[in-house]
Amino acid sequence: MSLFMAVGLVKRFGGLLATDHVDLAVEQGEIHALIGPNGAGKSTLVNLISGLLPADAGRIVLDGVDLTGLAPHQRVRHGLARCFQITSVFRNDPVRDNLLLAVQAQAGSSFHCLRRREAETALMDAALALADKTGLAEVLDRPAGVLPHGMQKRLDLALALAARPRLLLLDEPMAGMGPEDSLQMIELIGRLRSETAILLIEHDMDAVFRLADRISVLVYGRVLTSGDAAHVKGHAEVQSVYLGTEAHA
Ligand SMILES: Nc1ncnc2c1ncn2[C@@H]1O[C@H](COP(=O)(O)OP(=O)(O)OP(=O)(O)O)[C@@H](O)[C@H]1O
Image 1: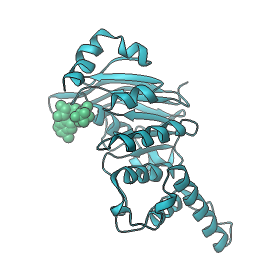
Image 2: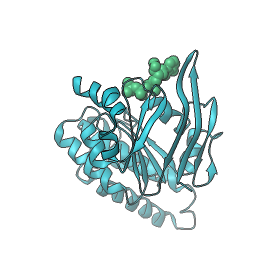
Image 3: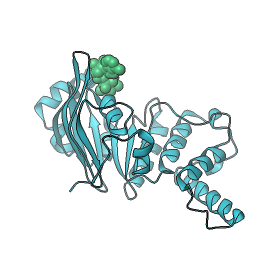
Image 4: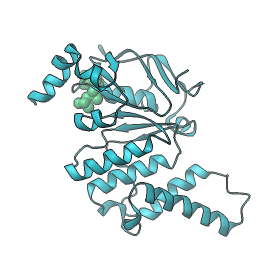
C-alpha cells in the first residue's frame, strides 16, 4: 500500500468543479510533484489534503489511517505537515525562539520524564539540529521577520520539519526566489527525501525536473497523467496544455 493516498477527492465552488475525482498516491521516500497551469486546482487539492478545506467527497489516507474527517492540526499529529506559500513565522521573535516553539509543540509531554534542565537542553538540541539541517545556524539570534526571503522560506520549512512529518506538503517553496536561493532550496529539499515523502507544488520546472521522482499533471481539476520526468516531458497533451503555455509565458 502507498504511504499516502487521496481517493476520489472532489471539491466544488458553486458550479465550478475545482477538484474532479482526484486519485493521487505518494510512496515512501518519494518526491512527488504536482504541476499544472494557473487555476488547474493545485492549491485547492493541497488545501483538501492538509484539511484547510473540507472535501465534498473522497478520502485521504496516510500510513493506513483515514484522515478525511480530521482538522489540520490533527493531521499534523498523524504525520502530515505543510509549508505555506506565505511564511507563518513569529516575525518579531528570533529564529531560535521560532524553532524552539515548534519543537516544543511537537514534543508535547514526551520530555516530562526528564528534569526541567534536561528537558530544556533536549529541546534546544532539537532546535539547533533543525537550524543546522536547514542552513539557519548563523542567524539564530536574528528576528525572523528581518531575514532575507530565501532564509524565511527555509525557516518555514524548518518549522514544518519540527513536526517530523511522514508526508510534507510544499506549496511553491521556490516562489519569489532568485537563482542562488532556489538552488539552495532545491538541494535542501533533495536531502529531505531520506526523512519524509514530499508532495511538491512548484511552477519552477527546472526544480521540478531536478527533484521529482514522479510528476502528476493537473488540468481542470483532473489528473491528466502521472509519471517520471521523461514520461511527462514526452506527453503530447502535457506539452500543449502546460509546458507550451509556460514556455510562451
Ligand atoms: N475559495 C474559492 N472560491 C471560489 N473559487 C475558488 C476558490 N478557490 C479556488 N477557486 C477556483 O478554483 C479553481 C482552482 O484554483 P486553484 O487556486 O486551486 O488553482 P491553482 O492550480 O493552485 O492555481 P495557481 O497556479 O494560479 O495557484 C480556479 O478556477 C479558482 O478560481
